[in-house]
Image 1 (cartoon, rainbow, N blue to C red):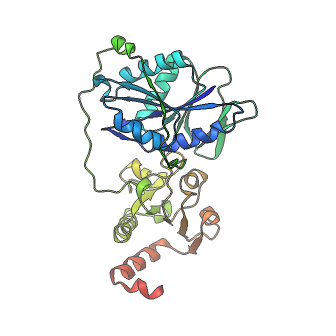
Image 2: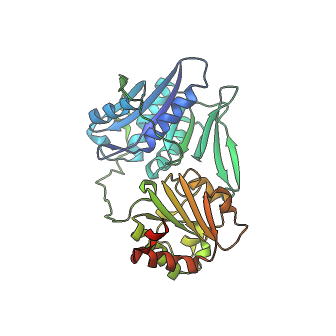
Image 3: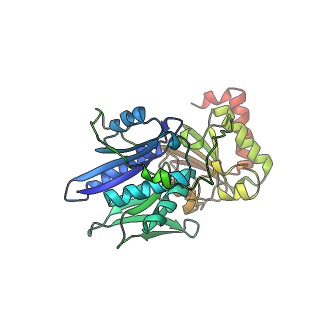
Amino acid sequence: MKKIWIYVEEYQGRINKVAFELIAKAKELGDAYLEPVEIGAVLLSNNAADSIEVLELYGVTDVYVGENCRLGEYCHTTYAPVLADLIKEEDPDVFLFGATQVGSELAPTVAARVRTGLAAHCVNLRIDEGGMMVADVPAFGGKIIGEILVPTKRPQMASVKPGVFTAKECGLPQASRIHKINLCALDRVDLRLVPQGTFVANTSVKPIEDADIVLAGGYGLGSQENWQKLVELAELLGGAVGSTRPCLDEGWADSEETMIGTSGKSIRPKVYLGFGISGATHHVCGMKDANLVITVNKDQKAGIFGVSDYYAVSDVNEILPVLIELIKSNKINQYF
């Protein structure tokens, strides 16, 4: 039986939604095999009961559970040896991780321990005619997509950016086979690095991946002043603010959490509004699945227009103040 596993990242008893996205993709990959496939979820926790029930809603066939008080706080020196031992014992064919802050550290650490390859920050996965997993990874700033394979080692490992795939509940809960993970590796853990706790910064900013409306700004905004107008418009519309890399480089956007694209986040908002964005491939890859795309750029040949439902050839310096004034004065309703 083929085995496709997903690492289930958990924080304070809640599963990171990228795990559900990976489960959906794993089931799709499994359909390419002409034999039974195990869709396994691997969970390390200090209290796993609630998470197991949630995972069964998404149709995993097997859940591998490592439950111990020392697994309550993530640390690669604790998690990696446990996962490495599990891999050596169960021999999965594919092991998928979310390319989160945790997954981006844990996946290569585990891969190094079991001496296999890892395709990092993938934007797509598929199974070829020979049964090999092919991982699509952006390169050269997203200008090309490289195909990464691990032909001779197992498991074939990949980390995938959150938001690339769509999570799908299976409807009725599916009774999964529960496997207890051997935690003998905890006795060999290097205790020079021990997590003491987790600090979570308080922020009122809505994450762009969770927003229904995203207003994205590009280098065409031209200045910090215009960036602030974009922020003001987003607040008026109840949306989140996204950016391209040049906005970060210029210092207009203050966090990489706003960046959309192959080196940032993938989003699927109901409405995407783009201002001064040229439409480079590495940005388009991160927003192309938005339900409605509306863009403004003064360059009538801007590439972003090719993926837009509606667009305006205009200067954002003129458009933004008008939109802000119309919404503040409630006059925008007369146009609808």
